[in-house]
Length: 318
Length: 254
Ligand SMILES: Nc1ncnc2c1ncn2[C@@H]1O[C@H](COP(=O)(O)OP(=O)(O)O)[C@@H](O)[C@H]1O
Ligand SMILES: [Mg+2]
Image (cartoon, rainbow over all chains, first blue to last red; front, side):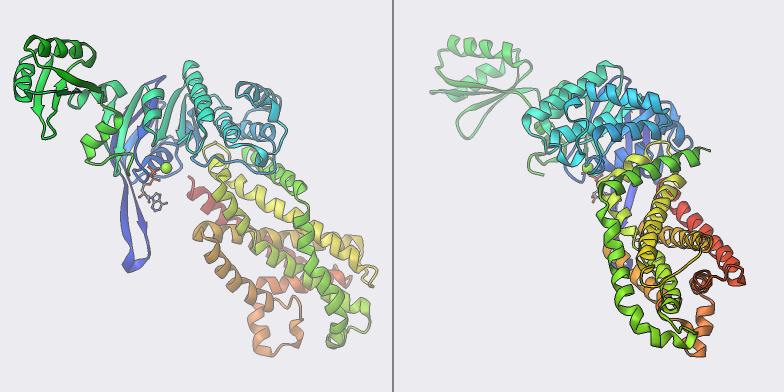
């Protein structure tokens, strides 16, 4: 549905002698399949918005190529525009008009006739749970309501691909959960959704596939499960009452244990393949040689560990 | 066709927004009305050199100049509204749709014309009890001229706003353009009083021609050559300004 090769964009900031060039997006290769919820995970300033704006025809790329919904981004922008919806990070509604008026105008801007525009607006209000506020001015909406209006506006023309820039940033947990449901519902309807986020749990729970972006480049991509599996498996930490060295030796010989390391703190850090099945075996092996176990803990890698492994920084801190 | 339809869409949205905050139109006329009430009587002696012997004559010279100043000055500041819309994301939302790029400009510029015409009607109606008298056909021609001036000044303002994209810079640029243009148009004080070299410079200012045309219309001389000349000249300026600005709208979006 979306395919990019070497997509680039840099900005010049400042004037004359103080001018510096920021490589916002530095040669991006991406493939997004049809009907996928694809997540672009990265810290602030990573280049997510810039990429999205290029793919949505809002910003001319400096180089590279991209095909969106079968249309070439460089030569067929009108065709790209017809197949996509785009919801900016900050949304975009006038304060003094109602959601219904906004939806009708949006449909009309896509060339849809008056009667059809009104019935689509009605259907969208219903689908996005907005009927109760349909005739109130947008300035009176809560953050979550406003975000739903933004997304309803983005899909009023039934696009094949929907770009969502940070759809849940700034929302309370309940509105976020609601928004995830809306996004899943769109995917069920056959839409391809390309969203950006800097929330680890959102990328993990909502997205079928993700690409981690940092400093304008992709540092890893795949399903969340693949990415987590890719880094050093799972880790079991074991504390024993005594004979730690012997325990390490015994455990290193187990099939399910890839490596065992005796740490300075006196506990053992075991790298394993499948934590749930490895734990009982580890306990049994230690019991067999008569070493007493005090604590055992399974640590599954998170996307933050993936980010840490690829960039040397934690996403939470950046 | 599509451009016309889309222009109508954009225009209707902005007229709807106007009706939701009508105060902004009234605030726009407050200053000219105060000027009219306070300054025009003072100007009567000053304007006597142009043949103003009565209050009617003074208003016939003063009001048309003030209307041009309003069309020019008011229009040049509309770019601030556009910067606000750019920041709010509504422009970007329109840009991802196939809506005509020229329509995004034309719809807004036509809204500006409506605002100006409403303001001009208020001013003329208020000036009537003070002694202003104009024929309806002359007045309609005068509004047409004002509409062309507004199209020019607002298109220029939108163009500058797109170029500088920063309210502070826009303010400086607009002030630097508005002040000399207004002074050299003889909008408030007739240039007949000015020294020769100043009049020579102002001959090159199309807006000073517009002021002459407006004064002829308010004096009841619709047949005066300055009337059709200023209409044709302002139509040309409006076309150029709209074309320049529409190109910027299209290019900053493609
Ligand atoms: N219009 C612009 N002018 C100058 N620099 C920009 C512009 N837009 C983005 N940048 C820079 O490009 C980089 C990427 O920004 P962005 O794509 O907005 O990141 P993200 O959406 O991932 O937070 C940042 O360093 C940002 O400062
Ligand atoms: Mg962003």
